[in-house]
Image: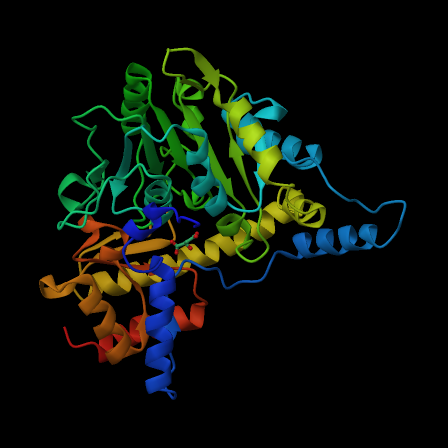
Length: 411
Ligand code: MLT
């Protein structure tokens, strides 16, 4: 008799964005004429940069000729892309990384979901609350969560609340934890952590033998000069942190799929007898066994993001989304809502009006204004009473959404 992984049964309901998609389709079925504006999942709407398209075309043509055709590539990524990443994303900040410390992949969702496999199941995991659901759900699947309690929290997970009361800055845990997920700029709150805050976490990790899993998928949206672009700008982080970066939000690759993970060779974790092991070796072993590399054509497209013209084009699109963020932020502030994020991130996090719960506000916004957002409670118990809107829509829809919120929503 085949047995299932019973940890899957501990997961409540569906994956957040699958649940939202289901509710929106049900609404569309009942209201076929409704012109629904989707500001829920953070999916980009603007096309790939012309420099990327041109690189993709060239790479496709290479695949059409025997002399330039490529089969399996290196599981860790082609050196042309890895060298370009180091030169552009790290060297300008004085961060030295070796080529074999970068692992190119098909997306950060897979990487942040898979990374927990190289850690023992008896590690204590800390997540910020609210949080990108992948960090939590994958640890539940792996058996690190304990059981789901009535307060909506798993008994074995350490939750670090991030709310307006603590300015969205998680406090250090009061009990010892081993794995810490941090996301900056933050999904879902759109807030950021300055160097002084990140330094606290690096020091905590060093003092407690913990590892920081630092998700930096929204790095391109940082506007304020004092906000760090990489965890490795913090002294000591190369001993305790793994960093995740993505081309999805930087360059519109949500459907094209390319990302990378940095695992410095100095980051160690331990066997029960206290022997240190470099995580780089374990991740390399995991990737070479379970992953055959991101497609050559896609990696050529990602490389083009860093060409002088590619950089300009990608920046124009990121600026476009940040103008949307400003439109949403200012529009909501103008009607007296409490609004966070949207300054260094493409997400706007608002307090639901009149103490409404997040899913009630979701239904109200959908029914009255035909706008889809994401209920804060879907990101964790501390997200209850909040709501997320994304700036990744097109301009016309963004302006129209704010107009509808101002004129159609009864507050
Ligand atoms: C989100 O909406 O939180 C993101 O788009 C999800 C993701 O990047 O997987």
